[in-house]
Image 1 (cartoon, helix red, strand yellow):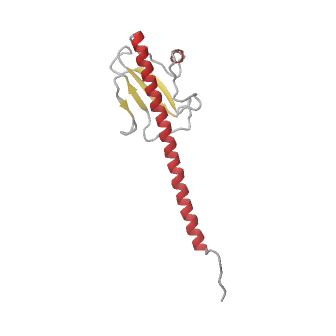
Image 2: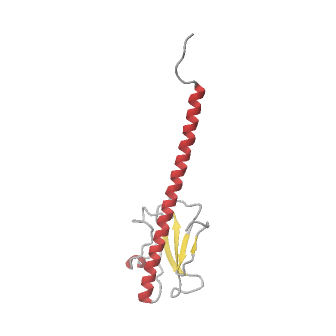
Image 3: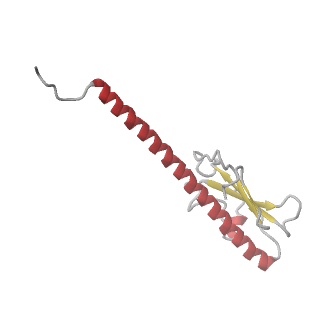
Length: 146
């Protein structure tokens, strides 16, 4: 009687199946961590811009509206993108008056994920658009995004 050493086809397939499951889980976890990191980038940019808006308000007694279409926001040191450059940023940021009040009383900062002016490949299907206003109200599409 001869003893064969090696693995059977079933054993190899089971091992391959387990490796595919683990790889799929790892890729999904990595992608989730990347989205959370970019979302943190957007929140940090909004908080920094809100501090800049409050400093601007203390000097000029009004807030400064801006968007990516205008150059005025960059002149006052307020960037319309969330990262270190517009090409690598995940969020485009706009500042506008709150719906019920004028620009002298309330400002709303809106972070739009993955537009054509920033990294268009970025998507945050869970939280979507992040926003904060000068009253401290924070909004997003899901409850625990802030």
